[in-house]
Length: 187
Image (cartoon, rainbow, N blue to C red; front, side, top):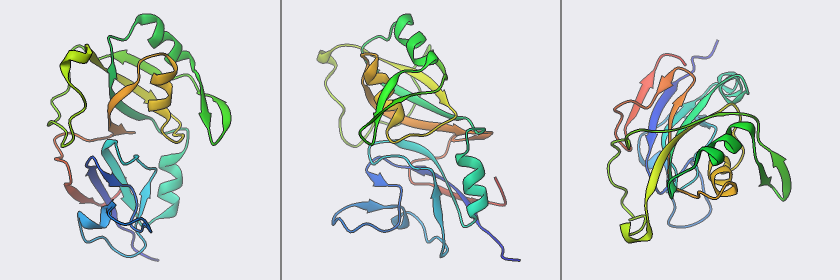
C-alpha cells in the first residue's frame, strides 16, 4: 500500500496553485519547497489570492476535501463599507458567471469582521486610502467555483481587493507565514 504525503502551505500573493505552467515568468508552488512526485493542490487559489492551500499525493483525500461537505472560509477585504443588505444577498446566494454560464451560488455564511486581520502588507499595493474606505468580511462556502468569492462580492457591489483562505474544514491557516510549508501526517 503506497504511503501518501500531505502538506499545509500558506500560498503567497503572485503564485499559481500549480507545479507546471507553459507561461514564462510565472511563480509556481514548486519554488517554495521540494515536494514529492505526484503532489497535487487540493482546490486552488488564483494568482492574486493568498492563504491556506492543502497539497497531497492522495486523490481520494483531494476528492473528500473538495466535496460540498467541507467548509472553506475566506477573509475578503472589500471596496467600501459593506451593507447588511449586501451580506444578506451573499448569504442567500447570488448569480455569478462560471465558464460563460449563469450560476446561482449556494447559501453561505457571511459576516463583517469587527477588526481587520493582521496579515502583512501585500507586495503590490492595492490602492491609496484616498479612494475611500474598505472593510473585511468572512465568507464560508461549501463549494469552490473559479474566483467565486471575488465574483460574489462584485455581484453585490463590493468588489474584493484582497482575499485570504483562512480555513478548510478544521484546518486553520493560523500563524503560518507566506510561503511557509508544513508536512502533516493526515488531513
